[in-house]
Amino acid sequence: MPALGLSLVDRYFPALGRRNFRIFWLGQIVSLIGTWMQNIGQAWLVLELTGSSAKLSVVNAVQFLPMLLLSVFAGPFIDRFPKRKTIILTQSVLAILALALALIAWFHVAQYWMILVLAFLLGIVTLVDNPTRQAYIMELAGRDVLMNAVSLNSAAFNTARVFGPAVAGVLIEAIGIAPCFFLNAVSFLAVIGALLFVDVPDRRGGAPVGNMREILASVRGGIDHVRKQRSMLTILVLVGVLSTFVINYNVFVPTFAKINLGQGAAGYGFLMTAMGLGSLIGALYQAARSKAGPSDLRIWVSGAGMSAAILVCGLQRSYIASAILFGISGFFMITLSTSANTRIQLASADDFRGRVMSLWSWVLGGVTPIGALWAGGVSEISSPALSMAVSGGIGLAFTGALFFFTKKGRAGKASAASSGS
Image (cartoon, rainbow, N blue to C red; front, side, top):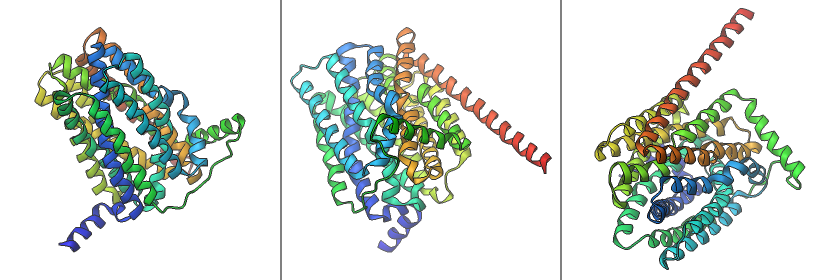
């Protein structure tokens, strides 16, 4: 039996055979469960304080505003400084912010402006933390199993999404919101502890970042690196548009659950769990197929499938159907993000990886303020359901149009090359 288990790991999850990645991965699972509990608690706290979809969307916008404005400037620092030490620092600060949120909730002094301030500070730290952790995967696992490692990293994120929201929903209805934040503060110790046991040599690289001129030159170098590779640029544009209009789950799900489906915190939590379960299945599917490498076709199909699921979900009012559709959307969201993430990391030179991943973080999360305000504004004017349907339709139309023009452009180049020869 042990031999069988080992062969299955080697065959489907080879990244887990790398000690450093395995330690970090296990620590992340624990920490991310806490993160999802805080996400659920924060959204529900805002709805309890304000009862407003628009004000919830503003919190999400404020949280991701630093990433929108400053993400590309984080890349040079990520490339320049040792990633392990950077992550230990950011995770420690995130733990302190979670504790602050726990205390204002525990003593019943939470006000809307306080949540806005803490969300903004969280966004500043995440601006550095997210792309650094993404870029660090290559150092932990190696290029040869990168797609497997990225997929397993997504599996960890979505394992947490399965358990975190469900536990948070039950805790909120049973004893209140504050424990969600306390548990998240403690959970960061798992990642910090894991990093203390990692024995990957600290690497420095990239251009100097001593003054603003050097920072801007380094940023331009990263952008030029992406522009020279049309496939990488196309992927970033696709993910950026879908993130703006479709991947607004922090606004869509709580407001749709409360306003259109008439659910409480537990019902909202289990909808997020359903999405997490679909995402986990997608991540494991990607990991099992990682030896074949990232598929361009899977990127296009996933973008269209995610958009279609959100569109259909907005057109119906069944709780069971909503859970299934959110699960389908979660599946396609992860197959899209893991395939796209791997594709651009493999195409990136080592010295540019931090800057490339900061651009990735910008298109995946930096556009969230725009998307959150869009989703919240349409929801406030009409309803969350209509906002979802319209957003899904935009995502589906854009994916189809970009696919058509990309294929047409490649066909034109191939025809020109054939004529020239």
